[in-house]
Length: 277
View 1 (tube, rainbow, N blue to C red):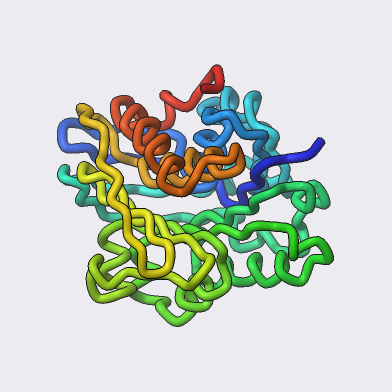
View 2 (view 1 turned 120 degrees about the vertical axis):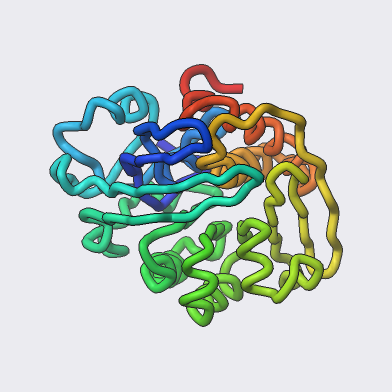
């Protein structure tokens, strides 16, 4: 089977402290990105630690995704605890990464070589992401592969040198407003290298599409926020799907903000289940 997009990342079982309630949900940057790209019409593979037996909350997703990866026990699934304070403000309270540190570039399946885009979602460290990126660059078919990377706040602020390396090597990079402030000093200073793409999500304000020094603002879609977890990763997956379908970066972002708006209206990735767009 050939793939449009292959996502390298993790799935997790999360505790979410929302403004009005605390809930349990499936999560993980890799999981959200893969689900969103598939829902947006792309042929998608997910390379992530694969629990056996599959925990009940993940069974529906596992039945829908082409999920490859080293087998782990259910006890080794990553578990995150996240607090959301409204207005796009969130904090990672704790992270148990389970077997994720044993998930290695040497394990990358041959099927990844068929993908047009390979996206490396946020992992436990920027060095882990860099190891995967360098392995992909050293692959014989890497010249034909578009490499995409996402990040998160702790990496930008605590591991900036490694994030800079990722930013310099990737063809496409995704970050949110807070991460752009930490990385560039301000959102207004954000720019990328020639022939590279940077997408900066702005929560309720939409997103920025940055191509070199050219910046285009894409407004958000008005929505009622229930659970903002995974909105940025949903935007990422939907954007990548639109790019492989031939849309321009701005057109891709315009499609992606719609799916991100739908995602935040429900707990977890419920809006991404089922039929493709």
